[in-house]
Image (cartoon, rainbow, N blue to C red; front, top):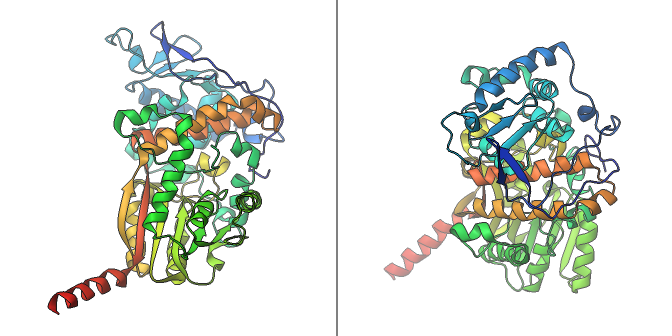
Length: 478
């Protein structure tokens, strides 16, 4: 693999019991069916340079003291129990009037000085790296991250937020999603290992939000057994909205591992799918051949910008996040260029509030460094503005389904940890497993709190609706 900080060998520990945490001296059942793997005593600096060594520069020491003060002040009023080795407990759990037995999520600071130094040196990058290193722990990591996600815009005092650009890193130019860089960015995530992804994805190998039949509180109780069906329901809805049927010429931007192409081919469509992941292409082609659709589905290793031809339907599932905000217009202009008259577009996109997008779109985060280099999550407003001003496409319909993503991620998280021993045997060590767990829980917390959403968005040519209206008016006059 070729991540910024690559994996090494070693195994984590898959568990089948429920974790517990202590709050106000009592034991609280967290409901998490695994134990978080502990990092090795010695971390290989050749594999994990930022994790093996605590920042010790003058900047890190000074910023660390400031970060420690800001963090302690911020958490005092949060619904958390932040525990330190000396017995100090911060957060609402420490309040004298705290209700007896209140189950606050527990964040345990194992190495306060290292935690503060990483936080001061890298901000939220440091928060994730310090978890990877074992400077802090949480039995229910999602619950802890939800507390922070719900208040992400107010945790740091506003005057200090305005200074963030002076000391926090910005996205490196080498990770901008130019045609030269994009293949590398994609491969650093999607080419990790098909076996790794198979360890936590369902039988459809679908790596995006499912759409469950359940709603409301019942959605929180969905189980693994229903995930594959919910993934297919998500795909079928997109295909329906794009009008995919027998004879439809379909362009898929972002192949994944081939499930959407398979389901479109089963309808009698002809599918042309592009990906920049060689691992995905290999397995997707294998699945297509085994299903008997090799004549109906073509999967090529190609940048979306290089696609030619004309298609009746364009579908793209959670690929726009990897485009980069500088290229969103190019993405939609490409779709417009290849979309046949009367054709439809159906995309699924993770979204963020527009004000958060504008505040963070040039930031370099833990997710960029370790998970998705070059990625930026769009807002609905950004999609509507770009398509409205820079293309002839128009958004016709949206379905928000963020609560479904939260449960999809929960199931992935539980499955990943249940297979920790197998993941370790693949060569992904305990630091990697803590990194991947942080990624899944961090993401799930975003959807649980509404900081993130996911939308199915239907678009078509702007002229389509007006032409239909003109025809209807003519019919009425006649």
